[in-house]
Image (cartoon, rainbow over all chains, first blue to last red; front, side, top):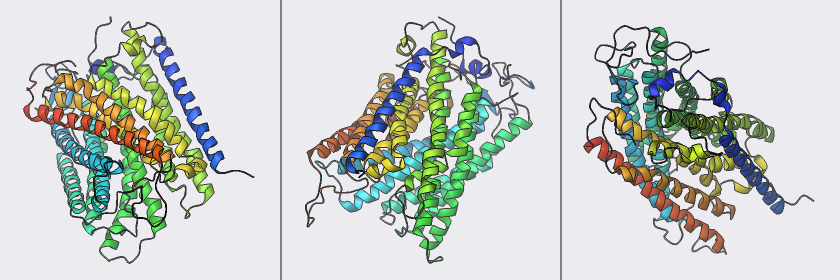
Amino acid sequence: MAQEKKPVEVFQKEHEHDEDDHHTPGTVVLTLALLVSFAVYYFANWKALADVWHVR
Amino acid sequence: MSTAIAIEPPARESSPSGLSVGNHPSAGVRTCETTGLPVCLTAQQFIRLNAVIAVVALLAGGVAALLVGLTRWPTVHLLDPVWYYRLVTFHGLNMLIFWILFMEIGILYFAATTLLNTRLFSKSLAWTSFAMMLSGAVLVDVTILLGKADVMMTSYVPLKAHSNFYLGIILVAVGTLIGVGNFFGTLYIAKRDKTYIGSVPLVVFGATAAAIIAVVTLLHGAIVMIPTWLWSLDVIKHVDAGWYRLIWWGLGHQSQQVNVCAMVSVWYMLGTITTGAKPINQAVCRGAFVLYILFINLASAHHLLVDPGVGASWKIWNTSYAMYLAVLASMIHGFTVPASVEVAMRKKGHNRGLFGWLAAAPWKNPGFSAFFLSLLIFGFIGGITGVTLGTQQINILAHNTLRIPGHFHSTVVGGTSLAFMGLAYYVVPLIFKREFYARGLARIQPYIFAVGIVIMSLGMSFAGSYGVPRRHWDVQFAGAQFAAGFGSGAHVMLGIMGVGVVLAFVGLITFVLLVVAAVFFGKKIENRPMTAW
C-alpha cells in the first residue's frame, strides 16, 4: 500500500497528472448505470404522458 | 506542467510545520496537525460562528420537518391546518436558506483562507455579515412562529406577510452578500500578496463559482423583496404577481444552485481529505463550474412551466436547452468526483475487479460515507428526476404534486445537507479542535440519514405520481361536498414517506447531538492530529 499523504500535499500537487489518472473502469460502469436509469425513467414518463394525453 | 498552489514561497516566516505563513499577521495563523493546512485564526472564529448557527437552523428546520411530515401521513395527520402551513414556511426557510447559507459562508471563508494560505480580508465585514444574517434569520423565524407570515417559503403575492418577514429575508440576503464580498476580498489579497502561485485549487475555484452565482441570486432577492417589503408597509400599492414569480425564482432556484456548487466543492474536498483523491482533469472540472455560472440561472424557468404569464418559446429555450448545459456540468462532476476517488484508491493498490476500489473505500469514515452517499443520491434520484420533471411536456403530469418535493429533497437534503454533514465530521476536529463522542454512532449516522431521505423521497415521488398535491394539509378533503381524495395506493406511498421522514429525523437529530456534544464537551485536540476515523 502506498504511504498516506497529508491533504496539504495532495492540494499542492493536484495539477500534476499521469496516464494512470484516466484509468477508471468502475466509474465508467457507474456512469452507464446512471444513464440507463435516466433513459428508463425519462421514457417511462413520456409513456405515462402519452397514456393520459392521447394524440388524435 | 505543474501550477501547484504554493503554500511554500514566498517565504517570510515559517509556521511550526515549516510552511509559509502567507500574509497572516503575527500569531494569526496555525498549522493543522491533521491536514498540514494553514488555518487563519480570524477565519476560524467565523467558520465556528457560522457553523454553530447553521446547526441550530438545521435542528429547528428538522423538528418542523418531522411535524410537517407526520401531518402529510394521513394515518397520523398530526397538526391543524394553521400550524401545518406555518411550519411548512418555517421548515423551508430554515432548511433551504439559513442552514445552507450559514454553512456556505463558513465554507467560503475556509476555502479562501486555508487553501490559499491567506488571512481573511476583513474582520469587520465578517462581523457585519454574521450579525445581519443572524438578526435577519431570528426576525424571520419569530415572525413566522407568531403567526404573521403563513405564506410558505415562496410567499407568492398577493399573499401578504408582516413586513418583518420580508425585512428579515432582506437582512439575511444583504448579510450573505457582504460575506461573499469578504470572500472576494480575500481572493484579491491572496493574489496581491502572492500567497499562491498559478491557478487556485479546484475547491477554491468551485467556491468562487458558488459565490458568483450567489451574487446574481441575491440581486434577484433584492429586486423582488425590497418592493414586496415596501408593499407590505403600504408604501407601494401593487406588486404584480406574475413579475413576482418570475424574479422570485431567480432567488429561489438559484440559491439551490449555490448549494450545488458548494456541494460539489465539498465533494472534491472530502474526496481529497478522506482518500487522497485529486481531480482527474482540471480543465474539464473547471469548465463544468463555468457552465453552472452561465446556464444555471436560466434553468430556474422550469418553476414556471405551467405559468400563463410567460411564453412557450421562452420556457422551452430555458428548460430544454440552457438547462441541459447546466445538467451537463453536474454530469461531468458526477463522473470526475468518483473517478478521482477510483484513481486514488487504485494507486493505493485496490485494483481487484471493477469495484474493488469502491469496496475498499473508507466506508466507516462518516466524512467519506456522507460524501459518497450524497453523490449517489444526488445523481441517481435528484438528477434523474430533476431533468425529467424539468421537461415542459412531462412537467404537466407532475407540476405542484408531491413529485416535486420528492425530487428536491433528494438534491438539497440527500445531496447538499448530507455532504455538509460529512464536512462537519472534519470541521469539528479541525476547526473547533474537539473530538467526537460516540464514534460508532457517528459512523452509522450518514447511513441512517441517507436511507431515511431515500425512502422519503421515493414515497413522495410515487405518491405524487398518483396525483397527491404538494403543500396540502388534507389530501382526503374531509368534509368536502363532493367525492374526493386518493385511493389505497397513494396512502401506501404516503405511509412510506412518513416512515422515511421519521428515519431521516433520527439521522438528523443524531447528527445534531453528536456535533453539540463534541463542540461543547468533546476532548480537546491540542498539538496532535485528530483521531483518524
